[in-house]
Amino acid sequence: MRAPKPANETLDFQEILYISMPYRTDRQDALALLAAETGLRLTMIPGISTDDMSEKGLPVTNNPTHDPHWPWVGIWRAHANAWRYIIDNDLGSTLILEDDVDWDVYIKDVMGLLNWQMRYNNTIPRHGRRGEKESRVSDCAYGCDYWDTMFVGQCQNSAHPDDLRHMTYHDPYSPAVKDTGFVGELKDHWNLTEEDASVRVLAPTFNPLCLQAYALSNLGARRALYQIGGFHSIHTAVDVEMIEHLESGQLAGYTVTPPPFVKWGVHGRGETDNFYQHFEDQLEEEKDKDLDRSMAGGWSSGLMTSARKALGVLGAPAREWEGVTSR
Image (cartoon, rainbow, N blue to C red; front, side, top):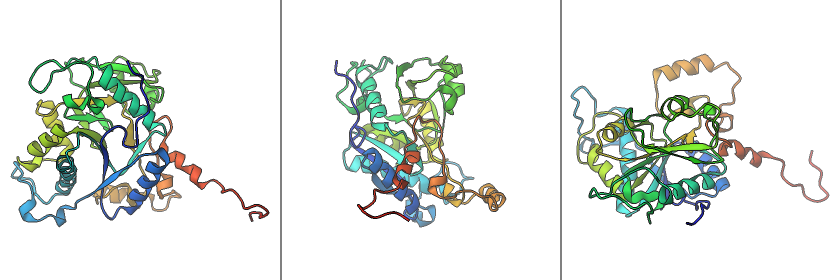
């Protein structure tokens, strides 16, 4: 059996897409730096404002109390455009990111190992599209011929209360359980301790919140677009809608915990694309505080070595010209 090796510039997916509102050039600049420093190639899918959508293109909502002009409709449309990009370009497997994510400096090693585990060492019983048992080895990256979705950047996660299928594997770049946001799940459901480190859990997806980083197979993209707003109605935010389809078994896949991708938070208005009153209140409380509100003043948790924090090397003194002294 071949040994794991670092992933390529698209982390062994056919493409890496990221969703970003056109006006969030600050986040796009940050991702350009992040991708360059870690050797990745990203493709941008423009975010959509609900206000810019035609009445004719708004999805039907199956809840009469919901306003089809709510902000989450535009968020759904942006993700739906990513799904359609996968379909239109006949991509076999694609990673979709939101523009405020962070990852480990050694993300190629992290994802190369995950790819190997899912293709050659996946011990979780599974069945193919027609119900027949799959062989363990898959020719598709991350074994994508037997899943719709793969969550690698959830902000919260609940495993199926009655389904204990899972596998653990050693990953030297996975932080201690106590340093992740998934202590409850990892301790209570998978019987790890807070001190356990260098381990990740792969399990069937049940209830992952947030779409910060997730992968779709080609069939998964078609199923998502068909089920969630593109052909049928939609009634809530796209990440919650996806949870409902995963819990019901209409979509199926895997979740990696702790996730290799996490959120990068910042102080100030740059934290969100939306305008929430509670957030405006928080800004008012913080306006007189001495905070670094730039992208560099942000933070993330749940990584061994944050790639965004590692960008600080670009601010180190440059080499001087011979015979010239810096002032």
